Amino acid sequence: MSFFDRSFGSKISPLKNGLQNIPSTEELIEKGFAPKNNKIDVVLINPPSSISDRYGKENMGEVGGDLIPLGMASLAAYIREKGYGVGVLDCPTLRIDNEKVYEIIVRKDPAIIGFSTTTYALFRAIELAEKIKNKLPNKLTVIGGSHANVAGIETANNYDVFDIIAYGLDGEYILHDIVKKFSEKNYNRSQFMADFTVLQNIKGIIYKKNNTSIRNEPTENIKNLDVLPLPARDLFPMERYIPLPNQYKKLPLTNMVVIRGCPYFCTFCDQAGTGARRRSPKKVIEEIRECVNKFGIKEISFWDDTMSYHRKWMKEFLDLLIKENLDLCWSCYAAVNTVDKDLLKLMRKAGCWNIFYGYETANDNLAKNIQTNRKNRDFEKMKQVAQWTKEVGIEVRGSFLIGLPGETPELAKQTVQNAIDLDPDYAQFTLVCPYPGTILAKEIGEGKWGKFISHNLEEYQCWNVTWLPYGYKSVKELKNMERYAFRKFYLRPSYIFKRIMKIRSFEDIKRYIKGGTALVKGFL
Image (tube, rainbow, N blue to C red; front, side, top):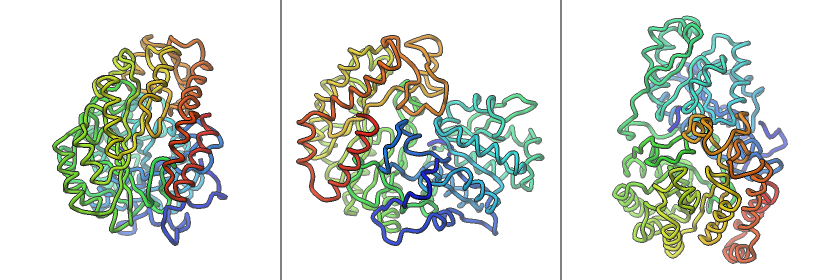
């Protein structure tokens, strides 16, 4: 888990999540603050971004897609447990912009401003941090999240608006160390940032010393994740969280992470080779019970990179979940090599309705180029697992990549045909994005596979062409291939007929209309 993982305007009404008496935006903002001794020691901010920002598509409409930022929720819970005042602002879900965030900061007067940001949202954080530096110079600014994890030194070298960059798979200990040591300096930023003896003893941070970026040694990974408190969902606008239309069956829904890190080595991923640590099945059941009893949750979306990678753990968890008899449905991510028909049957019995498989490509050479062959043995295995999944009554969602290292338009069309042959209920086609700090970005920078088209970090979200493989003649040719993939897969009469035949309720109809509208506006 990362250290921390544009406003739509006032005319947008709150998203309804199956709950009554939905609070106003101001009420939800106020709910996000839990002071200690009338003080907020740290506020954690998920910077403003819109659906268009996240997907690189204009006019997709109000389709949902907001879910609780679990990294922030876990940090907030840990800091609160340690006796400090904490606040959270999930700006995309609250539909608030930087001007509103600044107004809240002035009113709540937190000592530390913590930003959790992805690569594409980095500049929203920079914009706000710059304003804080100019107008509230005694505030300590800290940035973490997926971008800081893979490009921490670059962030420190290029942007002087952040006092501290935090990096690592687990942020709870890092943030606690920062808050504790800053409080011991009576929240005096100048004294704190000038005391290099103190700073050099905080693991997992990057800071400036005499205009030189210093990267301390990383903090140790938390081996026993059960010691951490459950995420502080009570501080977040749970009433507004709703997934994209094709990604849920029941509302209210919440996402959950029970495994940190990933055992695989996909070169395009910032989690590659980070290993995997699990909470105990009993602790996971405890969190599920809290979600059901406290928030009325009816569906769980497990966000673990590969939930089924540890067979013994998975079976123990499924057995416990079945015994709980909570009347829940759930979905998860899995790798082809990690499941068999017996496990899939047990998953279905426990309430699983949808599995997202990271197929990426069925071409052996392309898979080797990005090292996904370690999780997906070959196309025959993919087909077998897809068939098993459908036979036990679980829907299949598949991820496929366009613009892979070594790819040509002809090979891309093979990937699209593979998707059609696998026949998942939904297929996601995304452009390969070489995020800063990944193995793929390094390889491209060395002249392997292709050339960078853009270094504008706001475009780094898998829906823009940020690099061009040598097998393509132009950016237009690659973008047209993405469009070809969506049209070829979704406009098949057989596919449309199957989706119509799966309609079981008026809610299904509403979701299909919403999802279909977004698909047409954004990708077809």
